[in-house]
Structure formats: structure tokens, C-alpha cells
Image (cartoon, rainbow, N blue to C red; front, side):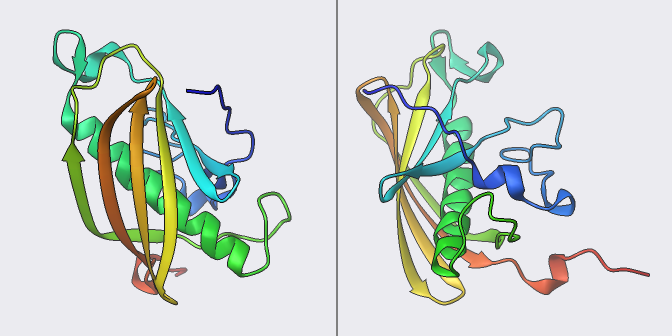
Length: 163
């Protein structure tokens, strides 16, 4: 698998009030700090898990892969809608935020520890406020998991109320 670095990630420009997710929030000191960017017309997240995410010696536990697919999907949908709205990362526009409506994961092969994981996403708009992301997760050249996330634009009820 070719080497790739996510230089510009959508999570880098999430507003502070919405940058606390355990998976992708840059402000969560205990989180994974997942970062999602474009690679051509696909989205990519690279993540090297720590040893504490072991399922059995030498392999990751599946919940970590589900978390990766979920947050990669959310970031991917945000990238796609941001671009559809005429913006790119770094142009000063605040990106949209999404929440998960449905997550399905197929675990295809045991996923080794201590190997960078690469999530590659394909984004499809299924409604102006509802998007679907198909993700494949690779450990080196091995396809280990495949997932589908259906996401909706974050409802205003999630937004912080000013008193």
C-alpha cells in the first residue's frame, strides 16, 4: 500500500464546540485524533493504534475498527458537503457536522497490531441532509474490514445554547 499523509483534515477546522469526539476530536486529550482528508475523489484516514487496543495478542479488537469506520464516515461526509457548498479546507468557512444514523461493519480478516491502518472512503449523497460512506480498512495491503455509515447533518438540538 502506498504511503499517504493526511495534510489537510476536516477535523482540523471543526469549531471548538464540536471538536471533542473521542474518535476524531482534536480537543479530546484522551481520544484517537483521527484526521480525514481527500486523496483524489476518495477520502482517507490513517491511524496507528496503540497496544492497549488489543483483542488477543497480536491483533486489534473490533470495536476500534468500528470507531475508525464511524469517525472516518463522519469526516468524509463533512468533506463532501463542504466541497459541495463550494468550500475547501482552509478557506475560512466552517464545515458541516454529521451524526451517525446507522453503522454496519463486516470484519473480513484479523487486524494486526502495530501496523498503520488506512481507511478509504467513497461518499454518496442520498438526500441533502443524509449521506452514505462506504469504507474499506487496510492493514498494509490486507483488507481487514469494510463498513457502511449513514449520516445525517447534525441537528440544531445538538448545538450549544447561549444563555
